[in-house]
Amino acid sequence: MAYIQSSLYNSGTQLDFAVSPDLGVVTGKEFAVIVNESYGGSEFTVQRHTGKKTFSLNFSFISSTFKSNLQSFRDAVGGPYNEFTYNDGSTSYTVRMSESSLQFTEVAPDVFSSSLQMREVSPS
Image (tube, rainbow, N blue to C red; front, side):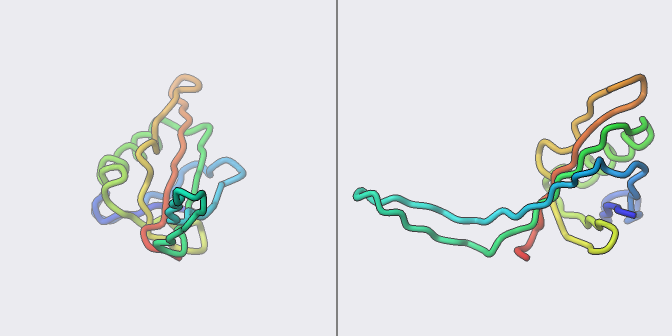
């Protein structure tokens, strides 16, 4: 089962996902490439690192209890400020959430949707 964990949240207790994310968890890789163009039109690049994995999880129908747990976790780690552990069920990653993560939309009485975007802290 997938979970997130931080020593800043609930004395380091892992937060198991009470609801599985929607199918189609998006994974990718962000490359830190700076592209500069000369006056003649030639491009020159600098790669700062080999890339960091990214993860995007969407939750369509979560309870108000799980919503509260996710909000508490977000607030404990300070949104994108502190790193935390994300385990996808088989591998653990040290990540930070994006600024726009865990904004909630009420889709029915006491039922919410949200998304969690994360990026690895160190290049993989």
